[in-house]
Picture 1 (tube, chains in turn green, yellow):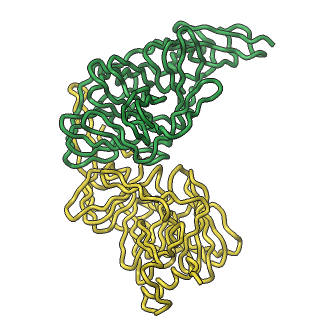
Picture 2 (cartoon, chains in turn orange, brown):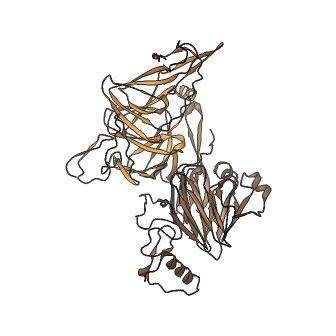
Picture 3 (cartoon, helix red, strand yellow):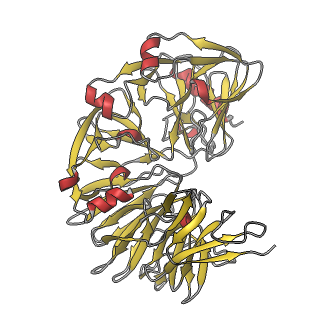
Amino acid sequence: MSGTYTCRWCRMSTDAPTLVSCPTCGAPVDVRDRVSDSGWYELPAIPDMARLQFGRSYCQIEGTYVPVADFNLTGDDGVYFTHHLLLWKDAGVTINPMALRGGWSRMFAGLPLLMTQAHGPGHIAFSRDAPGEVVPVPLQRGMSVDVREHIFMVATNQVQYDWFNTGVWFQTRDGDDTETHYPLGMYMDRFSAPGAHGLLILHAHGNAFVRQLAPGETLLIKPTALLFKDSTVQMHLHFEHPAGTWRSWRSWGERFVWLRLTGPGRVSVHSAYDKFEDPGNALSGSSPATRWQWQG
Amino acid sequence: MPLTPAEVWRAIQQQRTGQGGRRLDTGTRVECQWCRSQNAPDARSCFTCGAPLDIRNLVSDSGWREAPRLRDMTEIHFGRSTCQVEGEIVPVAEIALGAGDWVYFEHHVMLWKDESAAMSVMPLSGGMKRAFAGMPFIITIAQGPGRIAFSRDATGELVVLPLHPGVELDVREHAFLLASHSVGYSYVRIKGLKNILFGGQGMFMDRFVAGSEQGLLILHGYGNVFERMLQPGESILLEPGAFLYKDASVTMQVETQRLTSGLFGGSGMNLARMTGPGRIGIQSMYVHHHTED
């Protein structure tokens, strides 16, 4: 291999002439791309012990079933992470809480109240307690991605963290009771790299796939299967009623709750998603949504 | 005529125990990097622990060595018995027990067995304490001849640990899958209220001791398993739920780091400080134990 190599997963280019795996995201370069006929690109299994470079530090991916992200922090480099992902650390690595805005809202929404940051020098390692894949998402300067809650593992200090209201909800009525449902969660995490290139690491339950949507191209996905999307991708609800069920969308009946994603941008899903409990009661309201009743 | 792996292994065992046996030069053996057992030079996997011998070790830059990924259908040998490892995502340990050999195991890990494999219960001391601490109240014995198979109900790896004579190993509760008859079983009480409450092990840990004869211990680790050797005085901080096993010489002390967020109080992060000398094993899909939320 010679010249510049551009990774199919993270799209970062590197001048290294001989590579086994992408130095930015760890995706192997010596395997054939796995792209489904429908256009989904499967995250190639990161070779055990692959190293991802950022700043003067690097992250080594260890294991395959429940992979570990082992950071070797040097100099001023640091990372931040959510509370229950720390696997082990050198005694010399310092950890301290990171200030977050909107504590009450986060607590109310079930989001982690604390983000913890770590500074080197030394090693610190993270893993999530579920089988799946570590998904490195290198962020080039100016890039921004939205991540579903409880997917985020760790990010380097160059990555800016924020969160926003998804605006995706619907209400059902059962007698006098009205219940509000958030198929995506009430909030999503937003990660951006305003000043410099940064590394974001997520954990996918099962396998991870990514697909590029062209401007105006749409796709329906299970809301809980969403892993991340580019911030340019728009989303809203779509209700679908199979043929043979009640005709009125406001009445009780079998229904599928979809998330419609509209390009341009990347969309990523994971294959082992949570079950979303839709009580099936009559809809009494929702965020902007479309609906479709199949005819028998 | 070249020796078979079984003949090489038998000759090495005879020499080790002073029973004579065929003399082997160093060119006729290869050492397993996982369990340090000697093997025939053309062996693809270790006769004693099943670790592949023809692929390089996976060691991270931080010094963690990944537990060997056992090939499907690999055979491991102990006494007059063999263990075949089947499957990769939730592997099964299938034991073909020779006459006179026996293994013991926790109650809920048995997958299937031949009718001929006799079952009995191991007498244990401190039954009330064990029941109170949530440890298995009954350890069951299966005696050969016959086949019996074990697995735990979670994605992970079998960690095959041949115990050389004199080795003492502490294992987190409910991680042990089975042990051969030559491995002594007891338990140790965890000292210190903080270690009990926040150490993620409960009140007791299993302790396995090899007597004068080498024995086989098989654990199940959730996710991937890594091992690291700590030098005397060297310490590392672990998520307590990630702890899987350690040499008895390694000490464990839980430390709490307070993380506050102003008005919302905050949380304590409990980490177990493991101090050498000795090896420690961790699992990447750990059991999270509550901190002081």
